[in-house]
Image 1 (tube, rainbow, N blue to C red):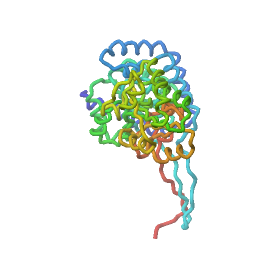
Image 2 (image 1 turned 120 degrees about the horizontal axis):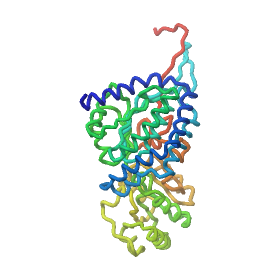
Image 3 (image 1 turned 90 degrees about the horizontal axis):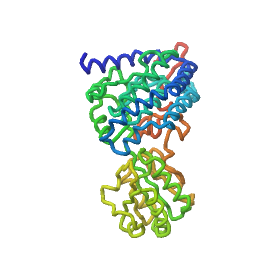
Image 4 (image 1 turned 120 degrees about the vertical axis):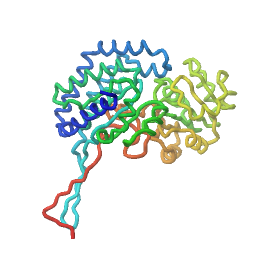
Amino acid sequence: MDIRQWVIERARQAKHASRPLSLLSADVKNQALRAMADAIKANESIIVKANRKDLGTATQLTKAMVDRLTLTPKRITDMQTGLRDVAALPDPVGSNGGMWKRPNGLKIGRVRVPIGVIGIIYESRPNVTADTAGLCLKSGNAVVLRGGSEAIHSNTAIVNILTNTARDNGVPEGAITFLENPNRQAITEMLSLTEYIDLIIPRGGEGLMKAVTSQSKIPVIKHDKGVCHIYVDCDADLQMAQEVCFNAKTQRPGTCNAVEALLIHEHIAPKFLPLLGEKFHKAGIEIRGCSKTVSLIPNAMRATEDDWGREFLDLILAVKIVPDMDTAMEHIVNYGSSHTESIITKNEATAQRFLKEVDASAVMVNASTRFNDGFQFGLGAEMGISTTRIHARGPMGLEELTCQKFIVLGDGQVRE
């Protein structure tokens, strides 16, 4: 069987599973999810061993990619917790927004239904395998997973655990399908299967996004790069600002919701930046700043034009001093990626204006950008953070994995 036929066969299995999966009760799905979480815990040593194989061949990856690839005990625990949290959430399938009555007596309403078959194309992070499988199962969608070759052993181990457990708990075979062939042609073939796959969600670097969006014949919801900013206003609590900025950069710099640039109001820069620069220097963070920033932070390097709007995914931070919030917002328009933007201020009017005028999947006040995350937002796990404006934006949880259909109740009405 050639690779195209192989991919078609796997997608066909997922399509075949999608209808019975969509009809499963919430109790069956929840029991399967809890059993899958238990199985991850019981087989932790197998997952760790597989992950070490992947890390052993990761010599060509960047530090950020290696960080994303690594499964620490905490990240494995987070996979288990995510599956249990999804099980505990309300089932969106079948929920409705009420009904209304037309003058002719027809009753009209809408109910949430699964999208069908969702294709996930992702890089590095093997925890995505468990998160997306769990969310798709709970929302009644079959899923076709295509992880990166750098995580092939980790993903295979996790998928085998999940699929065997799901099958043993009443989930139809094929509901969780994994394309384990590392050949890139598998992705190309997958993106052409409009007959079997209803939606594509890519998660990864800019190159992956461009390739998927240019080749796909299937609708795509992008989970694009995160060029996230924090604007420190002239009315900011400077101690709060220091703590928030430090957390947003250092807590996990290889993630899409880590801050990549700070915009500092010129009135507080002379007092704020030297202290912040010292704190960042001790943490090993490289500052790339404007000329005014370099004059205030001795260890800072002069930023180039390429540094504004760049997703570093590393212990590197761009810093610019601005005269006012209008200039900060204009910078965000020019260099942001519509992912996450935050302001630090005690001025309520300023905060409200920032919330209203800044366009991103999440806009925050006095909080770290690292909170733009499905788990942190109470959505359980997440498919990722959508930067697309249609259908779903921001962390994609269960509701975003469903669509609506109309239901019409009549008693013999005919259209005249």
